[in-house]
Amino acid sequence: MNKKYRRDVNELMLIIEVCFELVVFTLIFWTFIGKHIIDLSPDMHVNLDLGIIIIYVLLEVVLIMAMEGFAWNRLKLTDIIASQLIAVLLGNVAIFAYIYAIERQVHVRNFLLMCVVDAFVILALVYAYNRLYRYVNPVKKIIMVYGTPNALKFKYEANKRLSKYNIAKSISASNKIDVLIETIEAYECVLLNDIPAKKRNDILKFCYCNGIDVYFAPKISDILTRASCDINLIDTPLLYLDCNVSRLSIRQRIMKRLLDLILCAIFFVPFNILIILCSIAIVIDDGFPIFFSQKRITKDNCEFNLIKLRSMTVSNDINDYVSKTVDRDRRITRVGAFIRRFHIDELPQIYNVIKGDMSFVGPRPENKRNYEEYIKAVPEFSFRNKFKSGITGYAQIYGRYNSSPYDKLRLDLIYMENYSLLMDLKILLRTMRIFFKKDTLEPFQSKNEKN
Image (cartoon, rainbow, N blue to C red):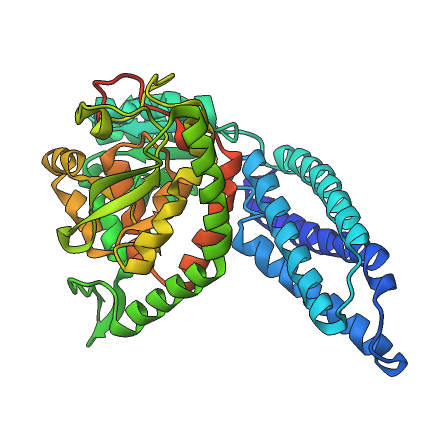
Protein backbone atom coordinates (compact mmCIF):
# COMPACT_ATOMS: atom_id res chain seq x y z
CA MET A 1 0.00 0.00 0.00
CA ASN A 2 1.16 3.52 -0.82
CA LYS A 3 2.75 5.07 2.26
CA LYS A 4 0.85 8.27 1.55
CA TYR A 5 -2.49 6.64 2.37
CA ARG A 6 -1.33 4.15 5.00
CA ARG A 7 -1.81 6.49 7.95
CA ASP A 8 -5.40 7.32 6.96
CA VAL A 9 -6.20 3.63 6.43
CA ASN A 10 -4.74 2.77 9.85
CA GLU A 11 -6.86 5.43 11.54
CA LEU A 12 -9.98 4.21 9.75
CA MET A 13 -9.20 0.61 10.71
CA LEU A 14 -8.73 1.65 14.34
CA ILE A 15 -12.08 3.46 14.44
CA ILE A 16 -13.81 0.42 12.94
CA GLU A 17 -12.08 -1.91 15.41
CA VAL A 18 -13.00 0.22 18.43
CA CYS A 19 -16.65 0.53 17.35
CA PHE A 20 -16.95 -3.15 16.45
CA GLU A 21 -15.42 -4.35 19.72
CA LEU A 22 -17.68 -2.06 21.76
CA VAL A 23 -20.77 -3.27 19.91
CA VAL A 24 -19.77 -6.90 20.49
CA PHE A 25 -19.01 -6.33 24.19
CA THR A 26 -22.31 -4.46 24.61
CA LEU A 27 -24.24 -7.33 23.01
CA ILE A 28 -22.49 -9.83 25.27
CA PHE A 29 -23.23 -7.64 28.29
CA TRP A 30 -26.90 -7.36 27.34
CA THR A 31 -27.19 -11.10 26.71
CA PHE A 32 -25.72 -12.19 30.04
CA ILE A 33 -26.51 -9.28 32.34
CA GLY A 34 -28.84 -6.67 30.80
CA LYS A 35 -31.81 -8.99 30.30
CA HIS A 36 -31.58 -10.22 33.87
CA ILE A 37 -31.40 -6.87 35.67
CA ILE A 38 -34.01 -6.81 38.43
CA ASP A 39 -35.51 -3.35 38.02
CA LEU A 40 -36.18 -1.05 40.94
CA SER A 41 -39.54 -0.28 39.40
CA PRO A 42 -41.24 -0.95 36.03
CA ASP A 43 -41.15 2.76 35.20
CA MET A 44 -37.34 2.82 35.43
CA HIS A 45 -36.80 -0.21 33.22
CA VAL A 46 -35.74 1.52 29.97
CA ASN A 47 -33.81 4.35 31.64
CA LEU A 48 -31.96 2.03 34.03
CA ASP A 49 -30.93 -0.45 31.36
CA LEU A 50 -29.93 2.25 28.89
CA GLY A 51 -27.99 4.13 31.55
CA ILE A 52 -26.05 1.05 32.60
CA ILE A 53 -25.20 0.22 28.98
CA ILE A 54 -23.92 3.75 28.34
CA ILE A 55 -21.82 3.63 31.51
CA TYR A 56 -20.48 0.22 30.52
CA VAL A 57 -19.49 1.37 27.01
CA LEU A 58 -17.77 4.53 28.28
CA LEU A 59 -15.96 2.58 31.01
CA GLU A 60 -14.63 0.02 28.55
CA VAL A 61 -13.40 2.75 26.17
CA VAL A 62 -11.55 4.58 28.96
CA LEU A 63 -9.97 1.42 30.38
CA ILE A 64 -8.86 -0.05 27.05
CA MET A 65 -7.36 3.28 25.99
CA ALA A 66 -5.60 3.69 29.35
CA MET A 67 -4.19 0.16 29.04
CA GLU A 68 -2.95 0.86 25.48
CA GLY A 69 -5.23 -1.86 24.18
CA PHE A 70 -5.21 -0.41 20.66
CA ALA A 71 -1.51 0.53 20.43
CA TRP A 72 -0.81 -1.77 17.49
CA ASN A 73 2.07 0.32 16.23
CA ARG A 74 3.99 0.15 19.54
CA LEU A 75 3.14 -3.00 21.50
CA LYS A 76 3.63 -6.69 20.87
CA LEU A 77 0.61 -8.89 20.18
CA THR A 78 0.78 -10.50 23.63
CA ASP A 79 0.78 -7.05 25.27
CA ILE A 80 -2.28 -6.03 23.23
CA ILE A 81 -4.13 -9.18 24.30
CA ALA A 82 -3.14 -8.74 27.96
CA SER A 83 -4.16 -5.07 27.91
CA GLN A 84 -7.58 -5.75 26.46
CA LEU A 85 -8.23 -8.75 28.73
CA ILE A 86 -7.34 -6.77 31.86
CA ALA A 87 -9.30 -3.69 30.76
CA VAL A 88 -12.48 -5.63 29.91
CA LEU A 89 -12.25 -7.67 33.12
CA LEU A 90 -11.87 -4.50 35.21
CA GLY A 91 -14.81 -2.94 33.36
CA ASN A 92 -16.94 -6.02 34.01
CA VAL A 93 -16.08 -6.02 37.71
CA ALA A 94 -16.84 -2.30 38.00
CA ILE A 95 -20.23 -2.54 36.28
CA PHE A 96 -21.03 -5.66 38.30
CA ALA A 97 -20.36 -3.73 41.51
CA TYR A 98 -22.43 -0.81 40.20
CA ILE A 99 -25.42 -3.04 39.47
CA TYR A 100 -25.13 -4.65 42.90
CA ALA A 101 -25.03 -1.21 44.57
CA ILE A 102 -28.28 -0.28 42.78
CA GLU A 103 -30.26 -3.51 43.11
CA ARG A 104 -28.57 -5.44 45.94
CA GLN A 105 -28.90 -8.58 43.82
CA VAL A 106 -26.35 -10.13 41.51
CA HIS A 107 -26.11 -12.85 38.89
CA VAL A 108 -22.68 -14.34 39.56
CA ARG A 109 -23.05 -17.18 37.08
CA ASN A 110 -24.01 -14.84 34.25
CA PHE A 111 -21.16 -12.51 35.18
CA LEU A 112 -18.57 -15.31 35.03
CA LEU A 113 -19.96 -16.57 31.72
CA MET A 114 -19.78 -13.03 30.34
CA CYS A 115 -16.11 -12.74 31.33
CA VAL A 116 -15.27 -16.08 29.68
CA VAL A 117 -17.08 -15.15 26.45
CA ASP A 118 -15.40 -11.72 26.46
CA ALA A 119 -11.99 -13.40 26.74
CA PHE A 120 -12.62 -15.67 23.72
CA VAL A 121 -14.00 -12.76 21.71
CA ILE A 122 -10.90 -10.66 22.50
CA LEU A 123 -8.58 -13.45 21.37
CA ALA A 124 -10.51 -13.89 18.11
CA LEU A 125 -10.83 -10.17 17.32
CA VAL A 126 -7.24 -9.31 18.22
CA TYR A 127 -5.94 -12.19 16.11
CA ALA A 128 -8.09 -11.13 13.13
CA TYR A 129 -7.17 -7.46 13.42
CA ASN A 130 -3.49 -8.32 13.82
CA ARG A 131 -3.58 -10.20 10.51
CA LEU A 132 -5.25 -7.21 8.84
CA TYR A 133 -2.81 -4.74 10.42
CA ARG A 134 0.18 -6.80 9.29
CA TYR A 135 -1.22 -6.87 5.75
CA VAL A 136 -1.64 -3.09 5.63
CA ASN A 137 1.61 -2.47 7.54
CA PRO A 138 4.25 -4.99 6.46
CA VAL A 139 7.41 -5.33 8.52
CA LYS A 140 9.48 -2.18 8.15
CA LYS A 141 12.97 -2.55 6.77
CA ILE A 142 15.05 -0.13 8.79
CA ILE A 143 18.58 1.13 8.46
CA MET A 144 20.29 1.94 11.74
CA VAL A 145 22.93 4.64 12.01
CA TYR A 146 24.91 3.96 15.17
CA GLY A 147 27.54 5.94 17.01
CA THR A 148 29.06 3.43 19.43
CA PRO A 149 29.67 -0.34 19.49
CA ASN A 150 27.26 -0.58 22.43
CA ALA A 151 24.52 1.02 20.33
CA LEU A 152 25.15 -1.61 17.64
CA LYS A 153 24.01 -4.32 20.09
CA PHE A 154 20.50 -2.87 19.85
CA LYS A 155 20.19 -4.28 16.33
CA TYR A 156 20.45 -7.86 17.50
CA GLU A 157 18.12 -7.33 20.47
CA ALA A 158 15.50 -5.60 18.33
CA ASN A 159 15.52 -8.20 15.55
CA LYS A 160 15.29 -10.98 18.13
CA ARG A 161 12.39 -9.50 20.10
CA LEU A 162 10.41 -7.12 17.89
CA SER A 163 8.49 -8.77 15.05
CA LYS A 164 7.16 -5.47 13.64
CA TYR A 165 10.61 -4.14 12.80
CA ASN A 166 13.54 -5.47 10.82
CA ILE A 167 16.83 -3.63 11.13
CA ALA A 168 18.10 -4.81 7.76
CA LYS A 169 21.30 -2.79 7.69
CA SER A 170 23.51 -0.85 10.09
CA ILE A 171 26.05 1.82 9.25
CA SER A 172 28.48 3.69 11.46
CA ALA A 173 27.97 7.41 12.00
CA SER A 174 31.73 7.80 11.47
CA ASN A 175 31.05 7.81 7.71
CA LYS A 176 30.74 11.13 5.92
CA ILE A 177 27.28 12.69 5.91
CA ASP A 178 26.99 12.31 2.10
CA VAL A 179 27.59 8.57 2.38
CA LEU A 180 25.04 8.26 5.18
CA ILE A 181 22.34 10.15 3.30
CA GLU A 182 22.94 8.20 0.08
CA THR A 183 22.58 4.92 2.01
CA ILE A 184 19.48 6.07 3.91
CA GLU A 185 17.67 7.01 0.67
CA ALA A 186 17.13 3.33 -0.15
CA TYR A 187 15.07 2.72 3.02
CA GLU A 188 11.64 3.88 4.16
CA CYS A 189 12.72 4.22 7.78
CA VAL A 190 15.90 5.08 9.69
CA LEU A 191 16.92 4.53 13.31
CA LEU A 192 19.43 6.98 14.79
CA ASN A 193 21.10 5.44 17.79
CA ASP A 194 23.59 7.42 19.86
CA ILE A 195 25.10 9.50 17.07
CA PRO A 196 26.69 13.00 17.22
CA ALA A 197 24.23 15.91 17.41
CA LYS A 198 25.41 17.59 14.20
CA LYS A 199 24.93 14.50 12.04
CA ARG A 200 21.66 13.67 13.75
CA ASN A 201 20.29 17.13 12.91
CA ASP A 202 21.40 16.88 9.29
CA ILE A 203 19.83 13.44 8.86
CA LEU A 204 16.59 14.52 10.57
CA LYS A 205 16.21 17.48 8.21
CA PHE A 206 16.92 15.31 5.18
CA CYS A 207 14.37 12.69 6.27
CA TYR A 208 11.77 15.36 7.01
CA CYS A 209 12.13 16.80 3.52
CA ASN A 210 11.99 13.38 1.84
CA GLY A 211 9.22 11.69 3.86
CA ILE A 212 11.47 9.07 5.50
CA ASP A 213 10.26 7.95 8.93
CA VAL A 214 12.74 8.40 11.77
CA TYR A 215 13.23 6.67 15.08
CA PHE A 216 15.96 7.99 17.34
CA ALA A 217 17.20 7.10 20.79
CA PRO A 218 16.78 10.27 22.86
CA LYS A 219 19.65 11.76 24.76
CA ILE A 220 19.07 12.96 28.31
CA SER A 221 18.86 16.57 27.12
CA ASP A 222 16.10 15.58 24.65
CA ILE A 223 14.01 14.13 27.46
CA LEU A 224 14.58 17.05 29.82
CA THR A 225 13.25 19.52 27.25
CA ARG A 226 9.96 17.62 27.01
CA ALA A 227 8.75 19.48 30.09
CA SER A 228 9.54 22.89 28.62
CA CYS A 229 6.83 25.37 27.70
CA ASP A 230 6.62 27.69 24.68
CA ILE A 231 7.41 31.35 25.14
CA ASN A 232 7.43 33.98 22.40
CA LEU A 233 9.81 36.87 23.08
CA ILE A 234 8.88 39.60 20.56
CA ASP A 235 9.18 37.48 17.39
CA THR A 236 11.57 34.83 18.73
CA PRO A 237 10.18 31.50 19.97
CA LEU A 238 11.80 30.25 23.19
CA LEU A 239 11.51 27.11 25.27
CA TYR A 240 11.43 27.57 29.04
CA LEU A 241 12.47 24.66 31.27
CA ASP A 242 11.68 24.97 34.98
CA CYS A 243 14.58 23.23 36.75
CA ASN A 244 13.03 23.42 40.22
CA VAL A 245 14.76 20.92 42.50
CA SER A 246 11.55 19.27 43.74
CA ARG A 247 10.07 18.94 40.19
CA LEU A 248 6.58 18.65 41.75
CA SER A 249 4.50 21.59 42.93
CA ILE A 250 2.89 21.60 46.37
CA ARG A 251 -0.47 20.75 44.79
CA GLN A 252 1.05 17.82 42.88
CA ARG A 253 2.82 16.50 46.00
CA ILE A 254 -0.42 16.66 48.01
CA MET A 255 -2.44 14.91 45.28
CA LYS A 256 0.21 12.23 44.82
CA ARG A 257 0.30 11.56 48.57
CA LEU A 258 -3.51 11.41 48.74
CA LEU A 259 -3.52 8.88 45.90
CA ASP A 260 -0.96 6.76 47.78
CA LEU A 261 -3.05 6.79 50.98
CA ILE A 262 -6.26 5.96 49.10
CA LEU A 263 -4.55 3.02 47.37
CA CYS A 264 -3.13 1.85 50.71
CA ALA A 265 -6.63 1.86 52.19
CA ILE A 266 -8.01 -0.11 49.22
CA PHE A 267 -5.24 -2.72 49.04
CA PHE A 268 -4.23 -3.02 52.70
CA VAL A 269 -6.43 -6.05 53.48
CA PRO A 270 -5.89 -8.06 50.23
CA PHE A 271 -2.13 -7.36 50.29
CA ASN A 272 -1.84 -8.54 53.88
CA ILE A 273 -3.82 -11.71 53.18
CA LEU A 274 -1.34 -12.56 50.41
CA ILE A 275 1.60 -11.64 52.65
CA ILE A 276 0.36 -13.99 55.39
CA LEU A 277 -0.16 -16.89 52.95
CA CYS A 278 3.28 -16.38 51.37
CA SER A 279 4.89 -16.07 54.80
CA ILE A 280 3.58 -19.51 55.75
CA ALA A 281 4.90 -20.94 52.46
CA ILE A 282 8.33 -19.32 53.00
CA VAL A 283 8.64 -20.78 56.52
CA ILE A 284 7.62 -24.26 55.34
CA ASP A 285 9.99 -24.14 52.36
CA ASP A 286 13.09 -22.50 53.85
CA GLY A 287 12.39 -21.48 57.44
CA PHE A 288 12.85 -18.03 58.91
CA PRO A 289 13.25 -15.09 58.40
CA ILE A 290 10.14 -14.17 56.41
CA PHE A 291 11.08 -10.63 55.46
CA PHE A 292 14.13 -9.11 53.84
CA SER A 293 15.15 -5.54 54.61
CA GLN A 294 17.75 -3.52 52.76
CA LYS A 295 18.96 0.09 52.69
CA ARG A 296 17.83 1.84 49.53
CA ILE A 297 18.28 5.34 48.10
CA THR A 298 15.22 7.55 47.51
CA LYS A 299 14.37 11.23 46.98
CA ASP A 300 17.15 13.73 47.81
CA ASN A 301 19.60 10.79 48.29
CA CYS A 302 17.92 9.82 51.57
CA GLU A 303 18.25 6.23 52.79
CA PHE A 304 15.40 4.04 54.02
CA ASN A 305 14.81 0.37 54.81
CA LEU A 306 12.96 -1.31 51.95
CA ILE A 307 10.90 -4.35 52.98
CA LYS A 308 10.34 -7.42 50.81
CA LEU A 309 9.28 -11.00 51.29
CA ARG A 310 12.43 -13.12 51.37
CA SER A 311 12.89 -14.98 48.08
CA MET A 312 16.51 -16.12 48.50
CA THR A 313 18.37 -18.38 50.87
CA VAL A 314 19.86 -16.83 54.02
CA SER A 315 23.54 -15.94 53.68
CA ASN A 316 26.18 -14.33 55.89
CA ASP A 317 27.90 -12.84 52.84
CA ILE A 318 26.73 -9.27 52.32
CA ASN A 319 27.63 -9.56 48.61
CA ASP A 320 24.82 -12.10 48.16
CA TYR A 321 22.29 -9.42 49.02
CA VAL A 322 23.54 -6.63 46.77
CA SER A 323 24.62 -8.56 43.67
CA LYS A 324 22.17 -8.99 40.80
CA THR A 325 20.38 -12.26 40.20
CA VAL A 326 21.61 -14.32 37.25
CA ASP A 327 20.10 -17.05 35.10
CA ARG A 328 19.22 -20.12 37.23
CA ASP A 329 20.44 -18.36 40.34
CA ARG A 330 20.84 -20.97 43.10
CA ARG A 331 20.13 -18.41 45.80
CA ILE A 332 16.44 -18.25 44.83
CA THR A 333 14.20 -20.65 46.79
CA ARG A 334 11.27 -22.56 45.32
CA VAL A 335 8.72 -20.25 46.89
CA GLY A 336 10.98 -17.32 46.01
CA ALA A 337 10.86 -18.18 42.30
CA PHE A 338 7.06 -18.07 42.39
CA ILE A 339 6.67 -14.83 44.33
CA ARG A 340 9.34 -13.12 42.19
CA ARG A 341 7.63 -14.25 38.98
CA PHE A 342 4.39 -12.50 40.02
CA HIS A 343 6.09 -9.69 42.01
CA ILE A 344 4.37 -10.79 45.23
CA ASP A 345 7.64 -10.26 47.10
CA GLU A 346 7.12 -6.50 46.63
CA LEU A 347 3.79 -6.37 48.52
CA PRO A 348 5.24 -5.53 51.99
CA GLN A 349 6.40 -2.22 50.49
CA ILE A 350 2.88 -0.98 51.14
CA TYR A 351 4.22 -0.26 54.64
CA ASN A 352 7.01 1.84 53.10
CA VAL A 353 4.31 3.79 51.26
CA ILE A 354 2.25 4.28 54.43
CA LYS A 355 5.34 5.49 56.25
CA GLY A 356 6.11 7.94 53.42
CA ASP A 357 9.44 6.45 52.34
CA MET A 358 8.02 5.43 48.96
CA SER A 359 5.16 6.13 46.59
CA PHE A 360 3.12 3.64 44.59
CA VAL A 361 4.55 5.10 41.36
CA GLY A 362 8.10 6.37 40.94
CA PRO A 363 11.65 5.31 40.03
CA ARG A 364 12.67 2.02 41.62
CA PRO A 365 15.08 2.55 44.56
CA GLU A 366 18.59 1.15 44.19
CA ASN A 367 20.72 -0.26 46.98
CA LYS A 368 23.57 2.01 48.04
CA ARG A 369 26.44 0.01 46.52
CA ASN A 370 24.85 -0.34 43.11
CA TYR A 371 23.75 3.29 43.20
CA GLU A 372 27.32 4.45 43.77
CA GLU A 373 28.53 2.26 40.88
CA TYR A 374 25.85 3.64 38.59
CA ILE A 375 26.71 7.22 39.51
CA LYS A 376 30.34 6.62 38.52
CA ALA A 377 29.28 5.20 35.15
CA VAL A 378 26.38 7.62 34.54
CA PRO A 379 26.65 10.78 36.69
CA GLU A 380 23.16 11.88 35.59
CA PHE A 381 21.70 8.81 37.32
CA SER A 382 21.23 11.05 40.37
CA PHE A 383 18.52 12.95 38.44
CA ARG A 384 16.13 10.12 39.39
CA ASN A 385 16.35 11.22 43.01
CA LYS A 386 14.27 14.32 42.39
CA PHE A 387 11.27 12.01 42.78
CA LYS A 388 10.30 9.71 45.63
CA SER A 389 10.95 6.04 44.83
CA GLY A 390 8.03 3.85 43.83
CA ILE A 391 6.81 0.25 43.96
CA THR A 392 6.08 0.42 40.24
CA GLY A 393 7.04 2.91 37.59
CA TYR A 394 7.51 3.75 33.93
CA ALA A 395 10.82 1.87 33.77
CA GLN A 396 9.21 -1.25 35.27
CA ILE A 397 6.55 -1.32 32.56
CA TYR A 398 8.66 -0.51 29.52
CA GLY A 399 12.06 -1.69 30.71
CA ARG A 400 13.49 -4.93 32.06
CA TYR A 401 15.16 -6.08 35.25
CA ASN A 402 18.55 -6.11 33.52
CA SER A 403 18.14 -2.78 31.70
CA SER A 404 21.30 -0.68 31.77
CA PRO A 405 21.50 2.25 34.21
CA TYR A 406 21.41 4.65 31.26
CA ASP A 407 18.22 3.10 29.88
CA LYS A 408 16.61 3.09 33.33
CA LEU A 409 17.51 6.74 33.71
CA ARG A 410 15.99 7.69 30.36
CA LEU A 411 12.78 5.80 31.08
CA ASP A 412 12.41 7.32 34.54
CA LEU A 413 13.13 10.81 33.19
CA ILE A 414 10.34 10.38 30.62
CA TYR A 415 7.99 9.76 33.54
CA MET A 416 9.37 12.60 35.64
CA GLU A 417 9.29 15.19 32.87
CA ASN A 418 5.73 14.24 31.83
CA TYR A 419 4.35 13.69 35.31
CA SER A 420 0.64 14.02 36.03
CA LEU A 421 -1.81 12.29 38.34
CA LEU A 422 -3.45 10.78 35.26
CA MET A 423 -0.08 9.31 34.23
CA ASP A 424 0.24 7.69 37.67
CA LEU A 425 -3.18 6.08 37.23
CA LYS A 426 -2.25 4.81 33.76
CA ILE A 427 0.99 3.32 35.07
CA LEU A 428 -0.88 1.58 37.90
CA LEU A 429 -3.27 0.02 35.38
CA ARG A 430 -0.50 -0.96 32.97
CA THR A 431 1.47 -2.55 35.81
CA MET A 432 -0.97 -5.46 35.69
CA ARG A 433 0.31 -6.18 32.19
CA ILE A 434 3.77 -7.17 33.43
CA PHE A 435 2.34 -10.36 34.97
CA PHE A 436 2.01 -11.62 31.39
CA LYS A 437 5.59 -10.69 30.46
CA LYS A 438 8.59 -12.85 31.32
CA ASP A 439 11.24 -10.49 29.94
CA THR A 440 10.57 -7.93 32.71
CA LEU A 441 12.38 -10.33 35.06
CA GLU A 442 15.09 -11.39 32.64
CA PRO A 443 18.22 -11.96 34.73
CA PHE A 444 21.77 -10.83 34.10
CA GLN A 445 23.97 -13.19 32.13
CA SER A 446 26.80 -13.43 34.61
CA LYS A 447 27.59 -12.43 38.14
CA ASN A 448 30.17 -10.02 36.89
CA GLU A 449 27.60 -8.05 34.97
CA LYS A 450 26.45 -5.14 37.08
CA ASN A 451 25.05 -2.89 34.37
